[in-house]
Image (cartoon, rainbow, N blue to C red):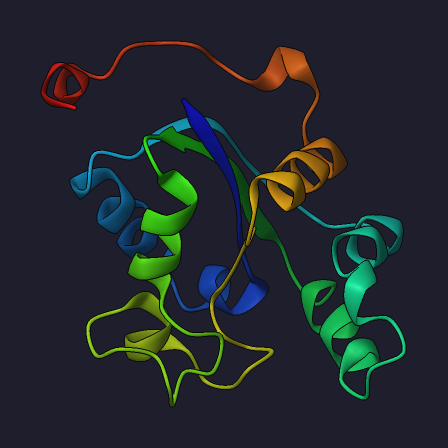
Length: 147
């Protein structure tokens, strides 16, 4: 089963949208196998966004993710990376599909509610920043018999 890393940004927490995001994932049959609310360290933020280092928005992005608590999670399911990217929408909320999480709730490219891995390689790297193996649970969802 494929795994995906998802990061609910501080504005998601401050705006009370954690449940909204999670319910949209669960209604699509995506299984949450790890979940926690944390304060991100500067080192974790820099590691998460290493591909953006040197870009004009990098410092603002780091400052933003350090501005409040976040929710990090690992998701599992068939084609979960592709499915999650469809559910959350384009990085730019103005280009995100109506009905997508970013399309409905995003405010700017950096304050766009969520960060999700864009590939299996990224997901593996990003999961390790925030989770140890013993924090990842294995269980069966009742909906999985239909998958």
